[in-house]
Length: 165
Image 1 (cartoon, helix red, strand yellow):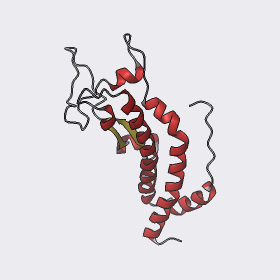
Image 2: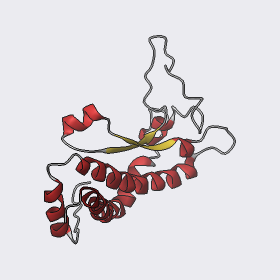
Image 3: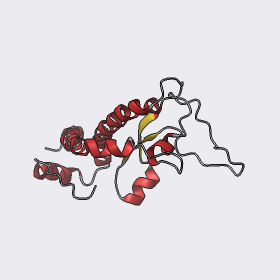
């Protein structure tokens, strides 16, 4: 994403509101909800892209396994703030010492789609057909805009809860 610039209107107003919430844990809640809305934009683009490469002859569907998840408290502490991830359910499995994939993925809504990374990054036998990276590139502007708009609304909700004006 080199060379990408963003212009966000209304940031000064949002910063003033955030300063009022600075001592409250509610700011994390507002940030997570805002980030989730932006991540949903990227996930929708990834689902559209995955739909074009999914094989309709099989029961497995990468598109159905795309999910938005929180970063987890340990990871959020390490990076210093709230975060959201867009990924594939069951997609981070490792090879066992016997040469087979460990972990169950057949219970996922789209079945066992461990092979998504072979399509995304390619192998020595097949060329890469990226759908996740393209989704991020296609929807980055819209996701950032969505996050900015949602952040203002979510911060207002949190301010109303603590009765700060």
